[in-house]
Image (tube, rainbow, N blue to C red; front, side, top):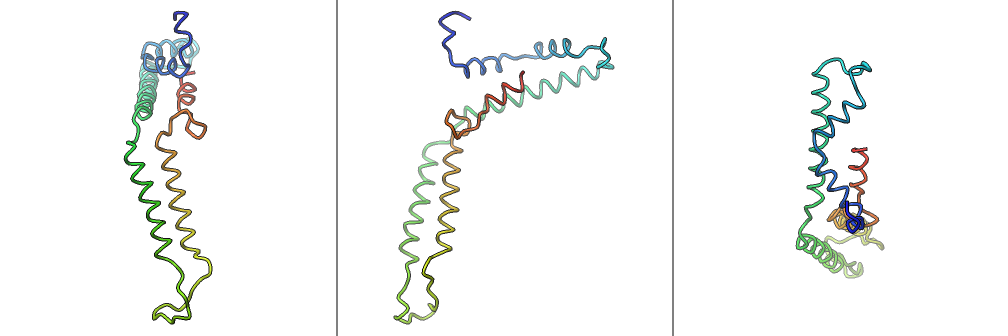
Length: 156
């Protein structure tokens, strides 16, 4: 690596390493740590199985990196946010308490606190906040998943 390239972010270096990780590296690692002389591998089928598992793990890490690159469109999040908040603004108007002295037919009981409306509000807004977090779950914020740490741990 050149001197001026040493400033590159650590995440970019990890992504390049994972992308360029190939079967030869896995085979060398396998031959170095587990050998027939130590009696850990009995036959060639065991070697093939281990190399297949290394390749499968590499494929899954690549798939995870592909999921990291794809993001949810901004319009989707805006529509969901507007829908949830407009629903609750209309709920505030539609579920107003009625005056019991008017003797409206079919309306006998009036609660002081609209418990079900509060519960519904908490559930929907909670789902909205979770959905906003999951817009970019593999980002660099404090509340995002540290996926590069997981992939780096797999390759150590």
